[in-house]
Picture 1 (cartoon, rainbow, N blue to C red):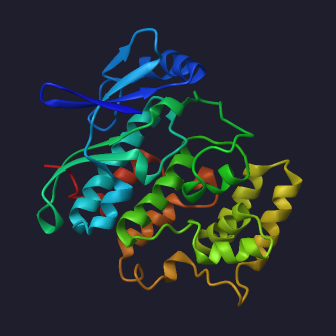
Picture 2: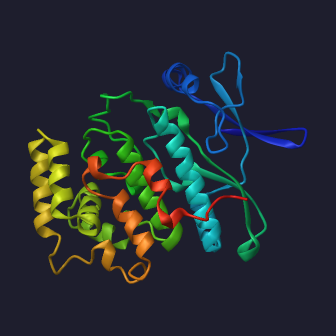
Picture 3: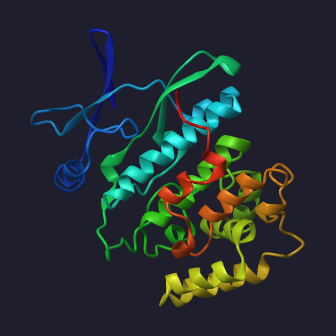
Length: 292
């Protein structure tokens, strides 16, 4: 990736592998109109498979560490969700929603920060999945933000983006990467546990109920080994040696009924029962969070 300046504007240069370059130009770009919430190429360097993008100031992963005001966080999240909704309305699934794929232009710092623009980036790896289509057998996305069905290489579609976005919301509002490679994960890994199983245990423990769990088992379907793994994690979720409390019981969300409600709607273990991006935008927690 490179950068250059032309006049008063800064730009990003991104070299794209040939297969992804062709797929984006054939399946993704023609289906998307210009949107304030999606970063699309503004130019292409001929014969080099290089996209030119407008430069944005910083990503959400970094900004959260700078003590953003609550309203700015909610504005960034709502604008990001509008970008996801725009993709989904054209049957395009991002497959790698994470805070470093959310870019922000802003002014000021701390309590005086003003959000000017928010865009979802890295659309080159998105997939066009018309009705009846899905991706299966692919380990899509980033370990720290991946949905349960993605960890299990099951069928992926729009609900997988929604689960990942919920994890981003928790990070933005609470400052926690809840599926990250923290001390707890490293301890279990040193004891021989697979990292993806530890992350799945957290997902089942934080967000699982019987109906959602059964729906995930149905979604995984004929993968007997993964169904057995999930069954073990379900039975193990209440073990005394696990520090993983249900999300609804976390002390820092127990008094925020609207935030708790929208997160639980986006993290249902059953992909078919998660809210859509458009439904989430109508949730009361996002009201009053437009960028001026």
